[in-house]
Length: 517
Image (cartoon, rainbow, N blue to C red):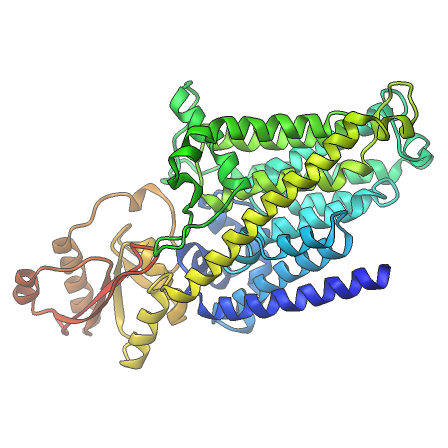
């Protein structure tokens, strides 16, 4: 059976990588992907990288991984390859070791988050998914490998703010389990109750604590930050309902087969689903609580992780589907570690508890519910992959290719809006251009208040003229909107080309050439 599992895992992994590689080759990276690459590429040292990361709102493990790759080549394509390998490693470990049936594993591998969101869109979240999977693999023998557990959770805390919340949930549950083992919790084996050498346990917890602390310190924004600066502590019933609905979006990510597919949900277009959406979310939470009720470690991780994520989405940043996916990852992780978590000590035998009618009914229901959820994930993954092949995700890549084909890659360039044009900069492998937002040269976006003012077409042309005179060379202007004909004629600008109609709507571009001033 072991060899069959291994062969099945290898077969699914190779199939996944083949599908993923073809899809990634069709994917035009957008600004969030390129931003991480530019930060890694243009930071002169690790210390400089962390100085540049202070506006990002995420810890820096992903960027640290990208730094060596950026020293090998300036092409961001290598980041896509690395990212896909991370997703492939997750698939292999899940299929090889997860306590689910072969059909559920197959569905997982081609689900929305695994196949598309955390494989094709190259962000830091795939690293978090991999480390959560590694944690689940180690969980069964956690007290024999607690230093490894500590190391994995140390790294997990540094992948994203959402993974940090999950890490805190896991750390709290493990601490409670260790403190109450043998008293209120009945271990699955005696090793949990009788641990002679406690040094590895303390080292593991120390690593977790250091990881959480250093990650939190990285998230402390500077005083001049200009992105997601608000907090929402006041109670608002509509906002609460909208946050609760995120559970259904994370658990049932059935993508719409339309041009603007990314982040869409087919189910929400049906009035009947809209009517039951909030009750369905509460059902998912109640069902999960009932399922994990006799296993406090799994229950505590689920409750703390789920409510921690929902609280973050409420008070700080609503987020997008890639962030909401951690709600489902938390649920799936708890389903994995459920049987290896110690039960509440009611004075009964483990066999009595396992054989109870309620437990059997819940386990059968859990299998059915999880399978139905994974079917929805697989449908969403297939649709998203198909839409990726059919539509241009961002025109940053094609714009850069056009600029290179015209031999203009060495021109002085002015870009606006900075976060959109940075995609072109990454694909051009250009050291820097002049951003009118912030009125400065740069490559990656610096999310400070200096860039939050509105910039008119007149001001853009004025700054381009100034640069042209200072450097005595023509200037290529890259905008994500058109300049009217009157301004073109007045300033003798030449319209070159436009690329519009991408999935990321504001990553279509208009190119203009200003003659030598």
